[in-house]
Amino acid sequence: MKILVCCGSGLGSSFMIEMNIKKVLKEINVEATVDHSDLSSASGIKADIYVGTRDIASQLTSLGGKVISLNSMIDMKELKEKLVAALQG
Amino acid sequence: MLSNFFTPDVIHLNVECSDWYEAVKVGTDLLVRKNCVEKRYLDAIVRNHKELGPYMVIAPGIMLAHARPEDGVLKLSLSLVTLKMPIVFGNETNDPVKLLITLAATNQDSHLSTLAELMELLMSEEDIEKMMNADKEEEIIKIVSRYSS
Image 1 (cartoon, each protein chain N blue to C red):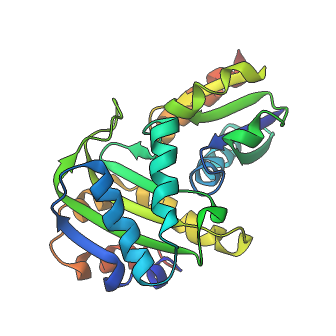
Image 2: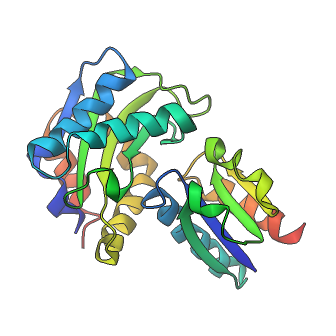
């Protein structure tokens, strides 16, 4: 299971979301590889789930994986809900 | 060591700006003055905002302005600006912006722990609220120190 977090710059915000995803995975006892990248590199990286905030997420839908679109970068509840749903579905 | 970055000279509170461009410029000017980023870093942020949308408004009232290391970052740095009147950046769910943090990161992994501390800070609703309403730089510095190891 590979999860890729994307953001416009590939540094900073995507890394911070990656940190939160790792926290959630630990909480729900699920193992996955989590990485981060900028939007332009994302198309070259194969992942099962792509994660980004709303504006970024709309650009991830053509990549062939599930897409999680976040309204807020810091809302753990939203992240957990959407991550769990994506992992189960 | 988040506290090392949020020094009084990069904190500017209750700034009056008429639009989002001006607000972002206040944040980057603080870093240009300290030789932490080149002037073109502002242009990169503006370009990203125009091309990709207001994705940097990461949570209600909070903007994390940043671009790529190769867009003119000289050293890892942060600035913090609060706006006297919140400004609309075009993000339906998180507008208007009251707190603007400008982040300039380099490619080194050594700063990841600082980003981790920044993240913890951003996730504290209570402290974000306090910072948005702060009148003096010391208040910000005090709050930041609790997240700094």
